[in-house]
Image 1 (tube, rainbow, N blue to C red):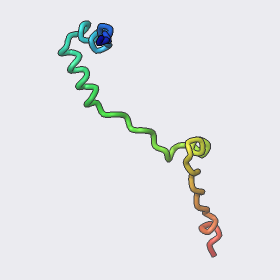
Image 2: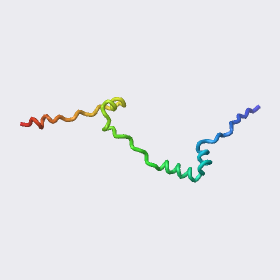
Image 3: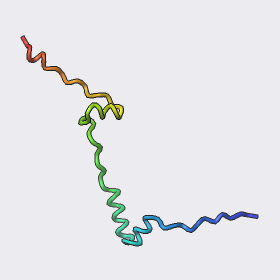
Length: 74
């Protein structure tokens, strides 16, 4: 005999609930706006302190050049 596996009836998803609640046109426009919205840029890593840079595997900031050669110029 052939065993037919019956799948359960599809349950409504979040998108179906949103369409039922707000209408297909409004959901479509909201989805398009969300797709076209620019994403936020990640924070600049130059501003991180050395302890946080070390935690994420980055090398520490290079040491600042010394001004001693300017102060003691002959």
